[in-house]
Image: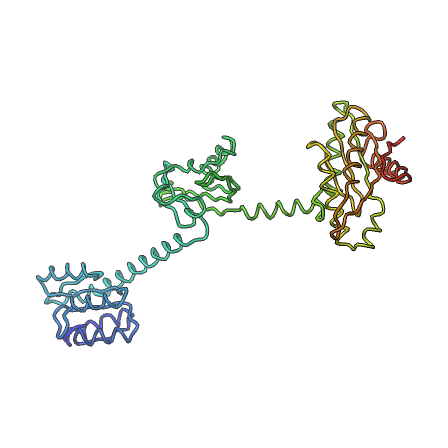
Length: 410
């Protein structure tokens, strides 16, 4: 924008040769109108113009939103106006000289203004990405004082920005890791400039939670570390999903008792310990009498309810160190650890039978159910799960001939 047509033509010519496409307006009003209808990257602005002078144009541009790079051109001795233009938002200024030397500088000044604009836009974008990233981000200095965090960090940790700045990341320590864990982390950071892995931190409210954390050393042009940046995500939901999958793989979905796989693992561990300590172990097989009749007459929903209630009553008859499992159908098995003799097992078996003979409420009616139990002992009746189950099963079928009793394998 310049009301001197001769100088304006020289500016257009110089910038066109430098690869720019240039439009010209003779006064501030026409220039503002052209800017609002066009798509311009840079505005070159004379100060003395009809209707609106250069400073007024800058003021009015400021009301339209973010300013493009503005270069103010002033006459000699008008540096005060240039300073005012810079205060209002101009990017740079040139002083007109009678020899026209400022025209030679103009392409360089435009290029510099555009370059600075790109840098600032990149920085604004980076700041937005940092602030709005879904991952928690923390930046520290080389003394590991926290100097910057983003919104996700405060959401995940519970600490506000004001509470966490200038603090050491040790504030987040869960206390669940041994010192060697952190020593290995810093060794990796020192030697490779990066560490990543699973770590447990502690929320402001005291709750420990798992994270996947990546720490990187930020270096300057000389390769010297200037900062450390940690990026993390809360993996609590992943852990919970993994735990659910593990639970489903080892537990009966109907009764929530251990399934055959988990029962086998526990028996094998118990037998290994019992072999070293010379202790006895008992394995019981339990079968509900006439369960098929319950299913056929009352329906499968009633049958499922009976199985679930049976599981609860079994658990109420045992110690914490014992295990009850459902093998399938109406077959249950029980592992009793550290028993003194067969009399101990007989007492537990009778307690289970007594508990199961109490009425079950099925379809709003009371029903009495009996059970048969077979028992085998380690090491007298076998030294592995397969043999103990087989012998307990034999004893159980002998018990079923009498119903509602238990039999010890002989």
